[in-house]
Length: 68
Figure 1 (cartoon, rainbow, N blue to C red):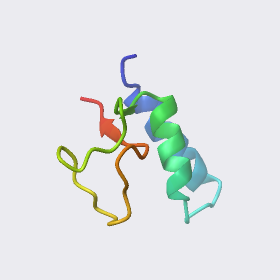
Figure 2 (figure 1 turned 180 degrees about the horizontal axis):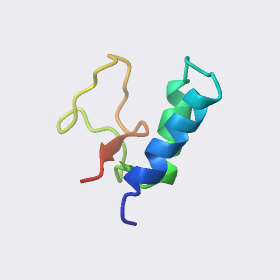
Figure 3 (figure 1 turned 90 degrees about the vertical axis):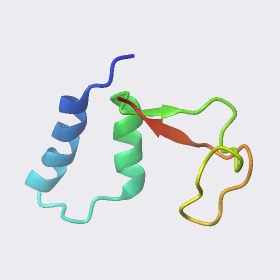
């Protein structure tokens, strides 16, 4: 799937235009996956290959890479 950056941006802008200034990050993740902007990593989080910015990731947890 080719990433649809335009559709992703439109989802965010639509929420802002509706007056929602506190967009939930779970929504952003959902829109990004749907638009192909975030790609699930096969096998999930691997501490030997990925950086855990939250400090809570366990091996195999759902993990994504950003489409190029």
